[in-house]
Image (cartoon, rainbow, N blue to C red; front, side, top):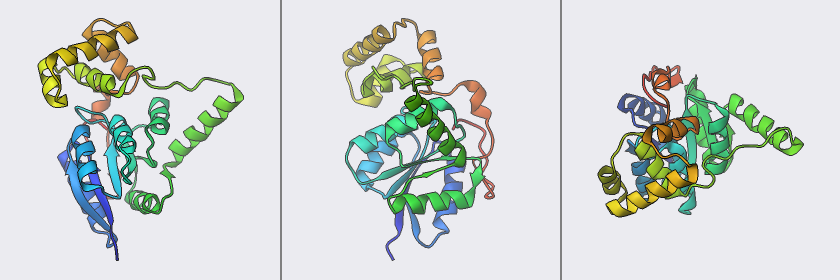
Length: 239
């Protein structure tokens, strides 16, 4: 029997270990790697080419939705299942743009995660009921002209979004240049371009923008609760 290969992308070691234990207990699922940040997840997905990446949204260096966009854009056959504590409209909008095959709320039964992995491996989509409801509502609203569906940072390039996240996380230009394998001058250029596009010219403003548009999460969200019910996985930090 060919097993479903899964890459776990989650920055909290305890949560990641719990997910590995949960999935590895299934005879038809094999965890083939673990990534602790979004950038590592993209690199490992391209190298390993797993069937599925289980992707947390709130991760350092590169958030899960941008990482998903890059994995999908790379053209590899890997599919992405988003795992998050939040069902905000902003994240639902980003989900549709990123190209994820599924979106699960962490406060769900362990059996739902296993079912989602299997469904997505078969080529189907899988969403938590609350996410599916929001998707349907937003679809109806957009086609009825009730409201305009916002698109996150639609005028920022992928690289500018990466720089935005790292600036908002408090990284200086030298650190960003090292992480992205760019020159400091190139980072400064991207940073100035995104500031000009957003018409925001101070770090505090960029941080507020990043939080408001789901690029990073506010400190108040970093204390949200359980990851997957029925399996004893608890989380006390982002995602």
